[in-house]
Image (cartoon, rainbow, N blue to C red; front, side):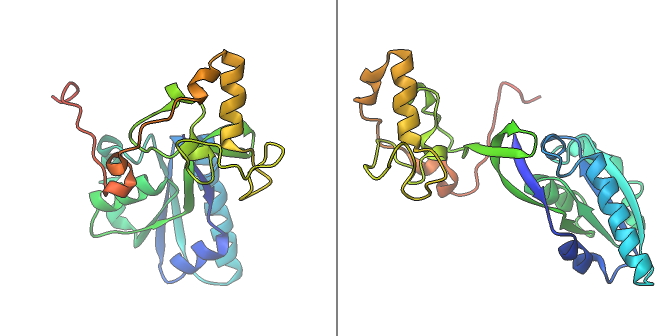
Length: 222
């Protein structure tokens, strides 16, 4: 899932301080799971802003809403009868949701309320780790289910680089060497022969390096 963290409250205060009426919109998707942008976080942000502006003796009306997903037109449409009443919107969705909300309501100021980080997993509550960079051509079948694009600091398709020490990355000794993890996993699986088979050069056109990407699933289109 997409992982995000809340923006500092000072940054959001600075964004909305010149408005009179602001709508905070959460997303019940990924950012709810990582506790950055769901209903609870909408309520906390709204309460914090109300407290700040009350103490500052500055009027700012704040309302709250959440949508099932902000990356889906169907759910964005649920705001159409109320969004005109606000000077600006603070979206607690990921960067996709913020942009899609702004596209749907082009005359409305939409600010991000979170910093979108990466696609990752929950190691434990409040600890999230990157696992995928959405390169567009998955090679996990060749690497024991461990992605060298996301987990090797150098994004090496054929490793290791030789710089790791005691299984830790030379770029950052706090993280595991991705290729050490791949080796260990293939050993457990009895597939170390794959470790010696070079991965074919990657066509990076399917990654972000090829420009903005688009998926067209003709089998799903109406």
